[in-house]
Length: 59
Image 1 (cartoon, helix red, strand yellow):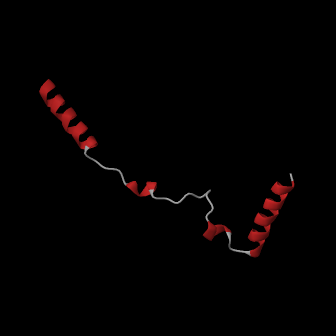
Image 2 (spheres, helix red, strand yellow):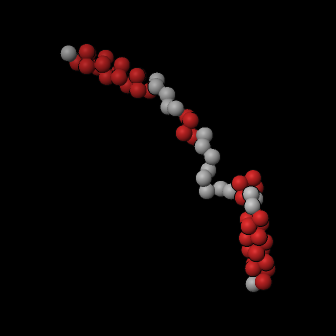
Image 3 (spheres, helix red, strand yellow):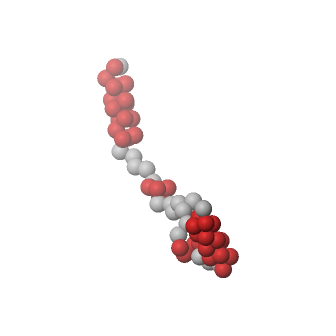
C-alpha cells in the first residue's frame, strides 16, 4: 500500500514540476513610465514641461 501511495506522490510531483507557466504576463509595458512618444503629443505638454524647467531654475 505504501508503494502505491509513494508512486502516486512521485507521479504527482513530477507532473507539477514539468508544467510551465505562460510568460506573456511578463511582457507588459509599464503604465507609469512616460516616453517621448507618449508625452509630447500636444502643445500643452510642451508648455507644462517648459514651465516646470523655469520654476526649478527660479528656486
